[in-house]
Image (cartoon, rainbow, N blue to C red; front, side, top):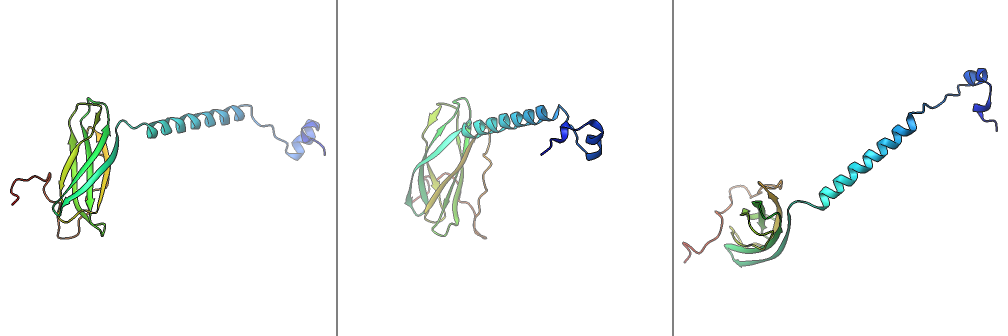
Length: 158
């Protein structure tokens, strides 16, 4: 097989042998490096959020409230808002509560009593964020119902 680049210039012109510009290879390498750096930065950001949270326990204490305990790791100077949702056995929301954790320790383990409109069967800690509400789904109550006032308390209870 004949290498077309070894032919005389007039034959190369006739048969369409083109030289690749010298800047193409460095451009491709530079783009690959930039994409790699971008993906690394994105991975680092997603793997190390500024606020970490985890649902620890929950207990359906009574038909009208559920007790939730969770942990939050954050910069102690930040006020953190966490969103907790309680659902019944049919996955219908029975409570939805934004919980504000004041600045303080880097690690906190709050326990919160959430008022429910029916017995809770599933509890979700949807998310936590510093400096405002986290970007999580809003409450999804069945038509004709609404979120009970939060938090639950013994005031006005028989």
